[in-house]
Length: 270
Ligand code: NAD
Image (cartoon, rainbow, N blue to C red; front, top):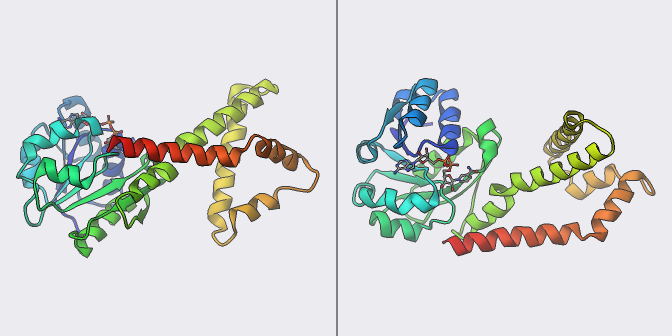
């Protein structure tokens, strides 16, 4: 991976996850600057990873080859306003990890021509198991695409979407998805407690079952998910009985409705 000069605008959880992945993967810390108003937060990152800490977004943006916009979507306009004219210059790559802020919106905020890649990561990036979707308009070079993908590969896996609207699909299928699994696991933990397990034991049972299921899926890339399910479902057995109840309550349709609601919300935010 090229060691371009990187500036993160924002020192939150997601910036930290990516910085950790990069530095642990051998990216030189002195090529990474992190800009945020809160000294406590950015200095903690500087101390932990050896990156440069600054409260000067303008200098950080000007000095970098790649600027990662990592603030909350509702702050993006006020953060971008002072950077107008600084990022739409040749050789500068801008990466946004914010949900619901479109390329067109960034062009309006920062000026054109802008070389910008939209990235939608998820929280398992914090433990190196992230899933990020990337979208790049036609003006982004193959080299910049490769760099963007490599950056996110430092915290997990990546996939490209052809249309910008595909980012909303990534939100529904991966960005918001950890919460779906947490909800499912919470419900299982609660019922295991009701059946007599301590909260710790209940959590361990559910957690290990979830990890095991995910590991089996990962270890069987050519096996359809339905086959994996059928493999643990003996006719007339306990699993079949549990799945019958899920079906009666239309779990598949509920999941579809929930994912469509996530896409819808993402569209509303744009
Ligand atoms: P966070 O709240 O943890 O961090 C936001 C950071 O922005 C803070 O460090 C804050 O100090 C900094 N900030 C605030 N105002 C600033 C300013 N004027 N200049 C520079 N920095 C400023 O948020 P997060 O969870 O890291 O999310 C960051 C972005 O990543 C968001 O746009 C979010 O949509 C996106 N994202 C997050 C997740 C997630 O699961 N956490 C997933 C996908 C995308």
